[in-house]
Image 1 (cartoon, rainbow over the protein chains, first blue to last red):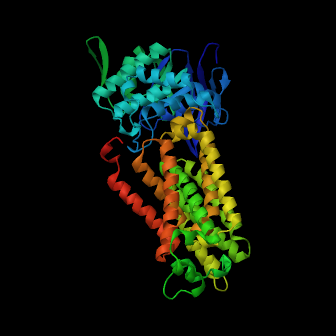
Image 2 (cartoon, rainbow over the protein chains, first blue to last red; image 1 turned 90 degrees about the vertical axis):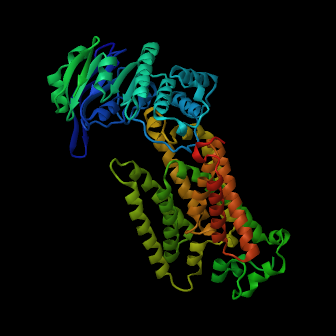
Image 3 (spheres, rainbow over the protein chains, first blue to last red; image 1 turned 90 degrees about the horizontal axis):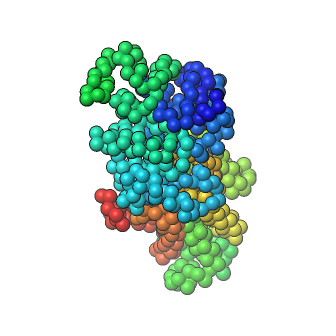
Length: 259
Length: 307
């Protein structure tokens, strides 16, 4: 890992039982990077995300974050400054938890055990809610939110964590077009305002092309290509990645992927 | 107090509560003569039963919040029945049933945690298998018990009236421990419910807190087993919490309400059993279930309405 790098994977290899899920993955994250991580279902994208905060156990290779080695056994320190937003799941509408409480919970990792959240944490939670445009819903039970609102609440919770690195696992999955657009705009806005480094897993190629500066392609547990976003828009390589023909078209100055 | 409670206990006493036409005479005279609250409280073993009902109802109710919100219903069923089987097995082997129940409950609780975490493993199926296994052990031990099996059968129905000061002390200690855990780790519990993966990824000790709550559940089940009974204790854990979930959007409120509902159901059930000569355990469960049914009908949270 070179000086100034935020995180890197050096030949990380992950096994689930007898199945090799990730093989020899090498990736370097610089501060301020926005990586789009793409590839077919089951390629190991979510598993790769989990390497950075020690949610994924690896058998060989090395994972470093902020100059230190990360492993599932010693990751608590890394988890405090890495926010991980998972794919949205359904929540019981009766869950006794308000939007504000769930966002405030984002501060609890840094706060540590046996300490009560004070004014600083509450302000942070409120500002995070404002940043994602949910301030008006602070008192609402979190189970009552729509899919898009829930995803924004998850982003606010991540933001309240004051992270250096933001891991996004399919942030726009199962959202309608308007909600997708709003979430993407919010991500872009937050990244700029809070100088976050982001790794985003997505199946939405056009969202990746639009937001990310760098793209990594994962297929069958191997990183088959990584580089700047402009060079990633190659129909042959994308076609190989997803095993379907993909064409790239230009529309009003934007390059878009079609299948 | 005319009789030592130990002496007055018989099989009929356990299953029929205070009355029943063909029940043996001694304990039944107590309830027939005076049925007011003063007479209820004038017997020391009844007073002890009342305190035990109050405390174990409250503790089980509060613990139920974990079970309901973390969707560990089946885990809870398995722990309580493991305690039941352990107590019966201990009884057969000549050990104190409390020790057997405690060992089995804590054993089941520490097995359930890691099982629940294994990827690609169906907790549902595992708990189904463990449940039937544990019940067969219980039945086996019950079948092997020599003699009248009074104490063994008592573990099925529970007998609030045989509660000793020692039992009360244990339950009181468990109640204090639960309060301490809730006070110290409330913020972590709040961070975990409904979003345990996010909390884990943010550096909150999810596993430690989950295991602690499971062990606490095992402890309480073992301590309450003798009083409430192996078949009924689980209802006292899950029903008040399920009721409280219908009534509030505040986690703090849910813990308090669930503890209150558990204690209230236990006391009301005990009183009903005294007044109408019903088995105490069944009366408690029916009261708790009735309150749940009412709360489902009148829940302010129905249709996503705000309270």
